[in-house]
Length: 329
Image 1 (tube, helix red, strand yellow):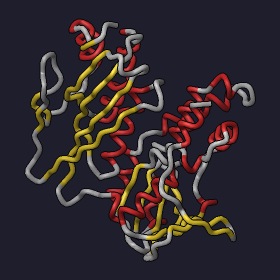
Image 2 (cartoon, one colour; image 1 turned 45 degrees about the horizontal axis):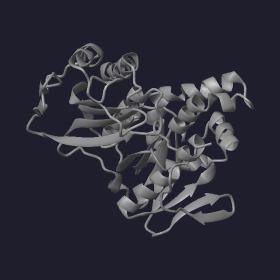
Image 3 (tube, helix red, strand yellow; image 1 turned 180 degrees about the horizontal axis):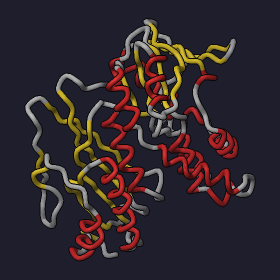
Image 4 (tube, one colour; image 1 turned 45 degrees about the vertical axis):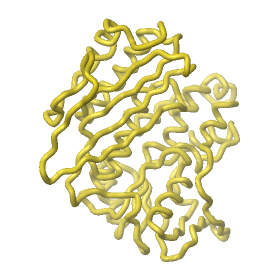
């Protein structure tokens, strides 16, 4: 496609006509020539905003982009109302690829009742693959927002589902041919399909009702990065039992193949929570069909300790995500 804004006929046909969800809070949404969106909230509500670029994958970029942003807002206890999209596209992009991206976005919008409020689409020489940035606008009652910084000494630390869900799925899709030289196709397909678990919206809803002090979506830097961030934000120490952190076997195999650390691999789909009664929270999550486990406690120390039987070592600040190491091989 030619450099510059998408042609109007392509914009209407392959972008706007792929979007179907409308919300009453949004007074002005996406349209040709519209520069802004407008949204109205009730007096006892406030805005919550989050934004993320998707640069680590080109496959299912629309789905991944939506999930990452919806997860961020869910971790604040917020309901996502709308999103703004910025899509920077390479010259080699085709209209069917643009339509597929928008259809992925629309499916997630319909599933979670989210409206695309506007955005920008442009073909540019600056990128050699699609780069999608999703900005989510959510709402929450003024006294109900949950932050990463709310963990208290004595809280149980809970993690949902399994770590490295997103990274496992991305690597299995992007590196399928290499992986097939060692592993059977059904293992690779199972790993690829782990993207069905990317949403943490359901567990956030359970946690808000049950009661939590802090929530943090486990993304870049993996579970080690998320643990460091929740401790740093809250000003607490940690004692974490490494053997209790849940891992799928497919993740173990793929990480072994590429020589990467699953505990430092992007983990959208897993939520980290701090709660006074972690076991009670786990029970409520399991009633909703969401696996979860208590992996340790917050402490009043400055130490962030990882326990592995008799071994004790200290958690370090987040490093570059292991995904990029795998994708470069």
